[in-house]
Length: 135
Image (cartoon, rainbow, N blue to C red):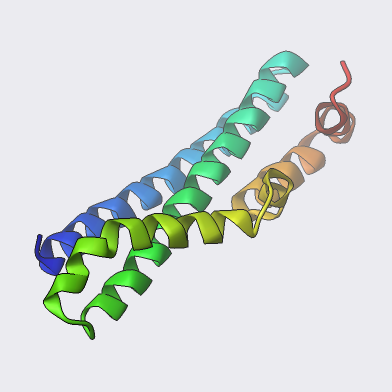
């Protein structure tokens, strides 16, 4: 496999990452609409979980891109037979990057923070209840 194919695939994955970010913006808009129409807290909790799931997906895409880019950069400086170990090297590097963070770190994702802040401003009591699992 040529590294140009890898680069092309990474470009497509970066576009997916952009789409995940757009999806997170849409979830925030839906949550704010739900607050305005006095929607129930169960629906808000589902939207909050969706935001966390999107943040996790965004993080995983980011780490995968980083791992592939690092390993392919190294591979360009190695002999051609090194190409046969790229898959395992990427898996190892991806696992290393994933191991640095926990799911609680998702709360610091910029779009999750924006989501939480928007809800707090729109309806402080409901946002507090959802954040703490009440209601």
